[in-house]
Length: 315
Image (cartoon, rainbow, N blue to C red; front, side):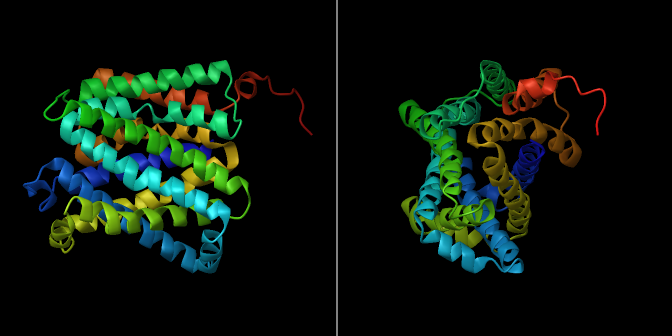
């Protein structure tokens, strides 16, 4: 559980640092819209994560294992999960922001752990107890409330397209963790190999499919040689560390509990925004953060272990 909590905290840090980069030129001055800038930043971010993980695995002299794992059935399952969670999920997120606004997008996309828990039950036979499911629902509702109160609830595009984009995010992010768990369970790839495959495939898919689809390569090439991109690369370092711990948690405790812990990133992001940017949260946001953290912890662990009385004497 500690590993999963660390993954959420690191992703919260990644989110805030990436947001700081988006406020810098040239990302902040892209004329095509904030969503267009987010798409380019997502590509740079995932490419940076892939490079950091390449260096990490290189230092551990495990790059050959990644190549071997990629050619196995388990590796292909991880590749499929990478495509769903990275380019498809993130592209849906960008489309949703551009059409229904960040507020509605945050609310809808926060449902991904619930979908992931359902998918884990169907495919992996992972079962969460009624109290755990209740805690997950409470945490998701708190995240939705944070999206409602902290982000403007706006609509400025095609509503149907925006809803489809948000649902793609839920499906992609929820399926990624389950497929990653499925791939690692087979034993051909471990959690470190799986996440390197995930990030490398995601970055390559952005470069070969997503950016050409949105005709965004010229913009990406313009923003790469900038100080803001260095900030994105730093965010990618936090992201790589978060992914390492997230996939390790999936390997240790399963997909559903890990996704429940990972949703705590929304609360950690509020804390890091206060520390790094001086953004003072509202009372409602603080209450929601406490509920998210508590709900994610209770959704990820066995309640019998929490309330079990310790033995009087220990050998």
